[in-house]
Length: 250
Ligand SMILES: Nc1ncnc2c1ncn2[C@@H]1O[C@H](COP(=O)(O)OP(=O)(O)OP(=O)(O)O)[C@@H](O)[C@H]1O
Ligand SMILES: [Mg+2]
Image (cartoon, rainbow, N blue to C red; front, side, top):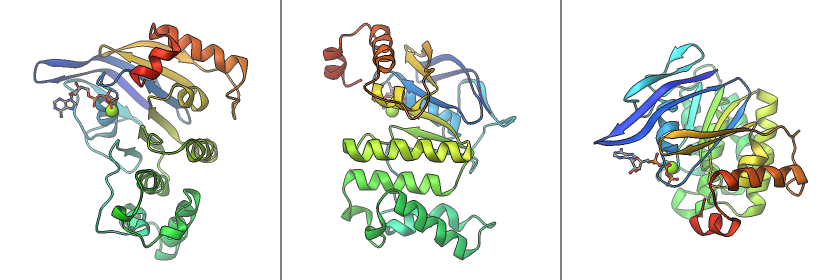
């Protein structure tokens, strides 16, 4: 469904991406791991049509990406909420241009996704009245409400407490399985990558350093020995001890 063919990106004279090729099939979850500044967000923005590649191309459903589309929604690292709109009005924003839905259908969807991220009591609150994690949940609900074919998530759960994060990870898997949504997810959280992804891509120095297929059934058990095995594979790839990973915030 998503084909990344030899994508490079040069900012000024810096070669950020040096030739990334990757295929994501429909309904697959791909997680991208890598150190801060290695180009993860840049790659996602190119796939989402928010940034152009220097060379190479991205094809989504047989069409070359030249601009953002509703089929492939990107959830940015910054939440991008409109401060003058309430929670429900932020979620409704992209749906308002969705001519296939009646106003009633729009309202049902907004209510459903607001409930999912547990923000129904805050429907009329404005972003400045919310915590960082709550703002992040509004952004997640807004992206999911469009029910896109593919969703690009840039550290979507980073500002959330552990329990909310686990809850939303499970919800994401449920939605993904119901709708066969294709997901590309950037994360610094190795456990999150192993929990969610069918395949993990490790980016280093502008290239794919390793692809790891996670062959475990879902939902996965974080305390399982196989889970631990994948953790070790990834630590080894980064040539780091567990303590160093924590120190470097990978
Ligand atoms: N618009 C831009 N102009 C110039 N340089 C940029 C631009 N956007 C990103 N860069 C540079 O590209 C590199 C990769 O940035 P990117 O945001 O993709 O990193 P990242 O892997 O997502 O990092 P993090 O984990 O910290 O979010 C960085 O060195 C950054 O300074
Ligand atoms: Mg980033």
